[in-house]
Amino acid sequence: MFGYLVYNPENMNDENKKIYKECYCGLCKCLSDSYGLVGRSTVSYDLTFVAMLFTAIYRPENTFGEERCPAHPLRKHGYWYNDFSKFAADMNLLLTYYKYLDDFMDDHNLKSKKNAEKMQEYINQIEVRYPEQCKIIKKCLEDNSEMERQNITNPDIPANCFGTLFAQVFTCKQDEYTDTLQQFGFHLGKFIYIMDACMDLKEDLIKQRYNPLITIDMNNIEDILESIMSDCVNQYDKLPIDDKYREILDNVLYAGVWSAYDLKKARERKNK
Image (cartoon, rainbow, N blue to C red; front, side, top):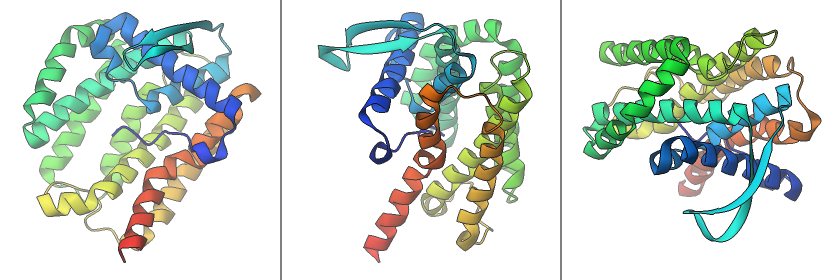
């Protein structure tokens, strides 16, 4: 369920693109430093957003640098990271690990199984650092798998479960912002779950795979998604976002999260 927390490049100036890309590269460096090539291969835009949101709230001291990497071997590129980037890197690896396990369970993909096995020792380390978050994430994924087996067709039930899971990704510390961040993560997780089900519906029907939207009138899906995102943004507006990062984060929440859906609708219109 990765790939929805992206920015819309058409609505972002060059300076903000630079800040965002350096945050992404900083997350990639944290993954590489902690977990080698296995970690670097999991870097995602979703957890880049998480790292930047925490940075925008807590304003930590960033570490800046330049380097070449396997993805950019010829030219040095800039990066920045902080302690929240390291937390995001841990959550990135953890969620990717469970995604590989889910892919193996769904499609018996042996490559996904091998990738998960390569990560196992690192997952053990993350579980020691964040026992409560890891416990809840694992439990939610198990509950979601059980809902799939039972063929639960009320989408609110699995979406709420995934929202509870995603709230843990925004539980980095306990302070006056924790409740708001958890509520923000909960609604964002619900949005991602429903959006992912929407994007996969046609293929899932063909392959006879579980999808909780099978009984939903898809003419109403945009209203459902907009309502969930409205709840998410209401929590976001309560947070003390640093102006340096606000336009970037706003871009993701107000435009970027709809990118895949808008592309899908455009293709459908073209086909018609």
